[in-house]
Length: 376
Image (cartoon, rainbow, N blue to C red; front, side):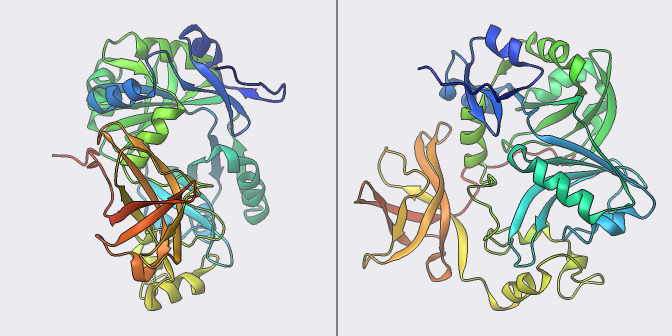
């Protein structure tokens, strides 16, 4: 299969390596990215669950924000208690708008008392940068164009990293540290987007190729593309911005109440103070009109994004936002939004696929247990 390429597509520092490895490249968020390698999506997915997969996520945006009082200033943009975030700890966060909708989801790590490192979604990074610059005047905002980002995911990831930088093995989920890899100064966090234990590595762009080749030299590690990245995150019940999250979706509807720090909730010591707080607080107290749910699919054929969900009377009650085949489950799976009255686990529904109703049922997520390392 050939993919038409736009001359405007950007390339990550690993493009030459992807081509050497026989990757099928596709346009994604303005970048020429590997969707799969010769082994195929199924094999890449299962290898990550069993051993370790290496992902190029250099298309993501990396930003450093610093200055006296920056934690309090950033708190006006996200519903997270950043003043209490310890140095070298990382948190998941949401940029919200005045309607309580989600502008982007991101990771925030504290590098120092007055310095934070953000990783934002590729498709949102230009608007996020403009938003930050407009909201945080007086602070130093640096977009790290000269950095790449690699993710090593799977149960064998820690064994590989132990041989290269033993200090990272002391990390627990959502913590990070500096480490020297391939002779370069890197920032490593124990985190990822697969549901597995693993690491994300911010590395200087000019060292990315050498580091990737070093990691791939271990027999436990295989390259993995965007296709398996999507099936892995779907099995783990993780949202994809622009699909499961957008500006019309609130954190409560999305099942992301856990991402709002307790101190920032209605009865917290630092309640509110972020965009859309009143809308979100009303949903916390009164309930949301719709909810994100997992969907178990009857049969073998996948139900894709955009499929309408109807109740047993044939009335529309929701829509699928992510769907595909789960190689670990050996079955199709999906997630979507349904009216709250239909959000209970076990609720029978129908998904309209080419106007034909397919039986589905609401189920709890994640579909596959998450295996993040939280310490002994």
